[in-house]
Length: 211
Image (cartoon, rainbow, N blue to C red; front, top):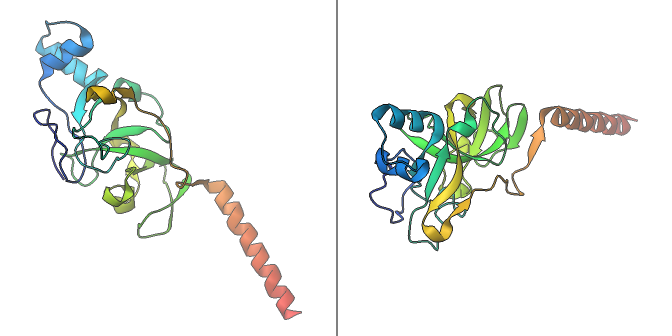
């Protein structure tokens, strides 16, 4: 895993994740239109509103750091959008790594509590997300350490939504909330009913064989 900075934006061939970036005052100029900010104002901005982060690695390709780009994407992580609000499937979020509290990850929400997801290489083929948790994945599954590695993560670890790509200029855009068509999520109640139907069919076939 690598730590991200704003110092260099050349794309490295390393495992992806994100981190908060200085310089504080220059970023505040861009977003707030003022050249005068004290320490309190800076802290409030980053704590309540959001921050810029450089995406490092390839786990979110092609949404972030596409192969054809020689620059790493710089994104805006919106803290305001997450405060007291519900996260939704398909959103790209930043969160504290469940494996290392010093690392910040950027992943997509694939499933929420009560939903059952077909996993990609996890220890069990299907997982029902427990209460207060979510299932996160990188868009580029083969290059991503995500819930398929460490399981469901606590929603409390999610601290912002990645809403915009700000750099490089030709990639300036709002990030879409979407899910790949192959990431099928099953409602737990529907799955339970499906299993019951399957068991009924099996019992019926067994009775026919006995007759």
